[in-house]
Image (cartoon, rainbow, N blue to C red; front, side, top):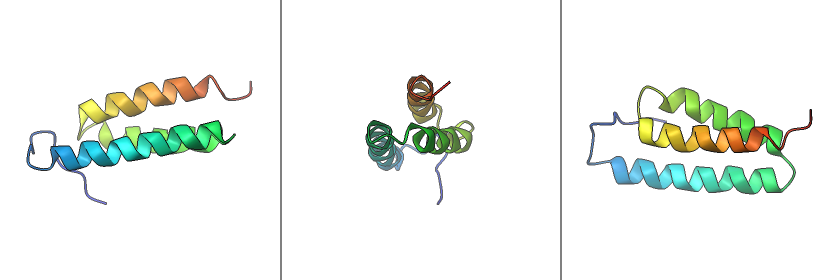
Length: 73
């Protein structure tokens, strides 16, 4: 999978759209009782997006922080 640099405005809507689908999927996964798996995937997305797409990184980071609260102690 290839991610575009933040300055690539031609593909920004595609990247944001895909991020939205993935975020919604991870939220659904957590609601289905798989918060641990959703956290793992959100963390991976954060690792990839950190240097490439700060706006979407923030979205995944926020989701990750919300999901961590659902994990058993």
